[in-house]
View 1 (cartoon, rainbow, N blue to C red):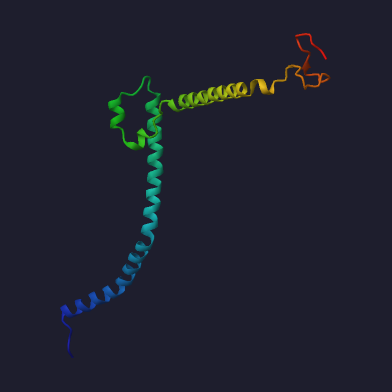
View 2 (cartoon, one colour):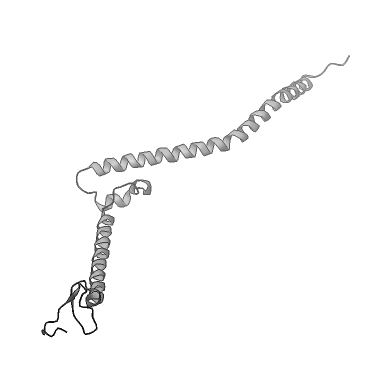
Length: 148
């Protein structure tokens, strides 16, 4: 009978071990390949959310410091933090100025339009003309005293 050498036995044992382990390793690699992209996306989303929350908290704490932040400090802050810092309220002033200007323009336009219509549409009594009806209540008698 022929006996196998130790090297042959080791080779056979290693082949059996590889055959037994490879399917488990392939399955684990396949599972990792399937689950990694969604987990990475979720991790990035959580990181962005937490980073935004941290930036907001930091900007709130910085704005609570008495006095304004020096420009050199604001320039060195990351964009995520400086975007959340309170800005001066210039928009409100601009809006009030624009609304005031529009209001003045409307009033001036109304006054000019009324003056343009002025005497033609007046509801005051008007002087009697020769062809006017003297019984009209809006007609005023003539001042020269000549009444027909």
